[in-house]
Image (cartoon, rainbow, N blue to C red; front, side):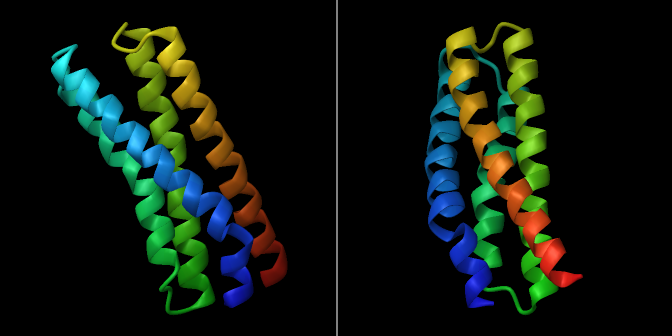
Amino acid sequence: MENDHSKYDETAKGKSKRFAVRIVKAFQYLCEEKKEYVLSKQLLRSGTSIGANLAEAETAISRSDFQAKIYIALKECSETLYWLELLRDTDYLTQAMFQSLNCDCEELKKILSATTKTLKEHRE
């Protein structure tokens, strides 16, 4: 299992933590400046869940548990992208704010997608 960890550890773990910090700050902005509390809460939950699931993967009890946590992180990325688009389309996020957050989330999604694909290939 140690080899699985090294494949994503610094790249996905570090990026997901930095992304979570940005999501928390976006949530604060949306609540304080835009007075938006519902969609921003969804963004906060899914955007911070990516890193939380990667943290859980570090203590997975089996290879399948590890793979499941990585896959859940990937699903949370997809959900976060949805909330970002919705916040942009409803004019809560500027195009520049959206682009920046969306770019980081897409990068995480690509990393996690490649990781799940690699894990699946090594399982077969």
